Length: 591
Image 1 (cartoon, rainbow, N blue to C red):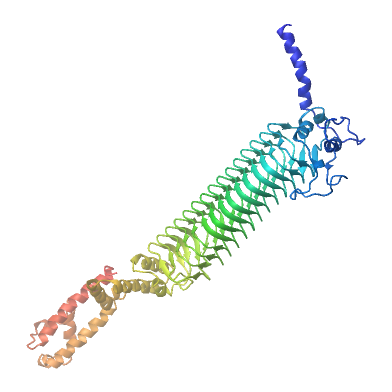
Image 2 (cartoon, one colour):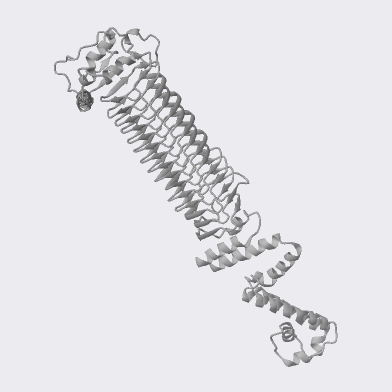
């Protein structure tokens, strides 16, 4: 036979098979009879299944007489042998003609069946819906590299072996509500619709690493051991609300294009490093007994962690729009180093048992530190464009709030609920509430540095309160004098009493008045006043005190003969000293 004729024959043989493979599902039977007979080699229960699914009905063992009534797959004891279906039977009706061609648009739906051997559909291409609901599967289910455009359901079923779905490519929903599974493997699988595990229990590892779900992924109200969602991409929302995960929940590199719900759930340890959530991530009402690691997390709107309990929380480098910890409890460390918040941070009515690290954080709105703090809060280098709110904050003794080199738009009243100890050297701000209680506020500093006093005085002065600004600067020099060494303290003391550190130069007038009067008294007591025709001596004393002022030339020709001359030597020196300090005060050199 010529090669061309051989090719034509092969094409004719292959063509019918290809046509059958692409044939559409049959409509529901009007006669309630299947036109494809059962295989005589099938068991009675398999024949029962075929007669039902062939005409578009579900094969429900729970309602058919002779199969033991309504049975719970999660209580496998007592399941009768006559419910057992073979994997080969299932594969035959799903994948082999003429049975596959005879299936209706409702596909294969079996309820309450029992499988004692592994269900093997690896690499298959299903042309119909498959539902094995409320069934007992005592071995593995192999869906690896299976392809289908139709839904698959294992709702209410128990799979005692491993559900293998590596590389699964499903263009519709995968429904596994309220089931019980030992181990599940969905590595690099794709589900084009919804993947639902709501209310299910997985006693072994749930591995979904690299999974892609185009619609929603619901694992809410579930009981889970170890869960791997590394690199998962969910097109809509991911729900883990009211679930309990006793092992590690790993979601490194997770991407959710809508919301991630983890409300009222219990977790042992959660890893959300470098995850991305387009809208809201909520842990409201949840409890995490181990570390909650969200380093590098990005959330488009709200990271809601209110009324929840956490052990240790890390948000280093995270980017969110709102951070809400209202009413929550964090027993360990809260690390928000280099975090960026587009709007507000709420910590009102929260309880923090460990330190809080907000160093170099950037908050575009307000920071509400209105909780209860047992250890230090560090805002070193942080930038808060809005206000710092400390209303009703409660601080344990010896707790320090560090604002070193921070930048804040508005700080609260200085009489507000500040921490017992403060470190705000280098802190800058644009506005302040009431500042009249500044002395108590500055006492919270461990040691004196000039910048905090200058910063507050500058802000207050810009508000038009120049008198208060001067008092603040004077208070700073007083604090400096109290902590200065002996030599430095003597110099500062002189500055204080002579010109008020340059802020109250009018004090020098008192010194002038005092020395002038003292000189007059010396003249009277020594007799030099009466001897030189100066019954009062005030003009002479004043002329001898201030070197830059000459009242009468006669005063400079008087030669005192008694000890009074030595006093006026000293008074003249004091005049030069007073003049020096006065010039320094007026020029600002003494400040």
